[in-house]
Image 1 (tube, rainbow, N blue to C red):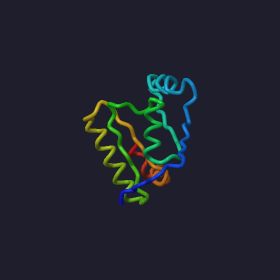
Image 2 (cartoon, one colour; image 1 turned 30 degrees about the horizontal axis):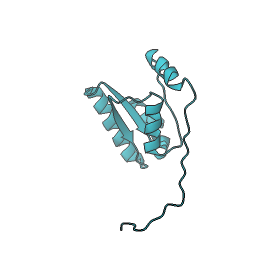
Image 3 (cartoon, rainbow, N blue to C red; image 1 turned 90 degrees about the vertical axis):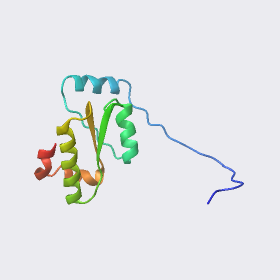
Image 4 (cartoon, rainbow, N blue to C red; image 1 turned 45 degrees about the horizontal axis):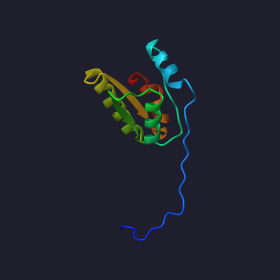
Length: 114
């Protein structure tokens, strides 16, 4: 269905900017070999955009996504991500875990996959 004779009455958007120095600080932490995790309550796509904005994710990275809400599928996704990293086909990797998957991904029996 295509809208015809649509008149837009208004629109709004909110830009939540990062605090000054966040990308540089994260970059310095990564240079010091400190592992950095960013937890956000945003949707997967927004979280990925935040990752790029704060320089935690970079354009040359392969982004691995764990987004299931079923424990067995999360285990499979994490194992697949771990296998990809071990093969080292990309210069670097970023791991995005959705909120629904995080509760299972952090279980002790899956810790070896990180």
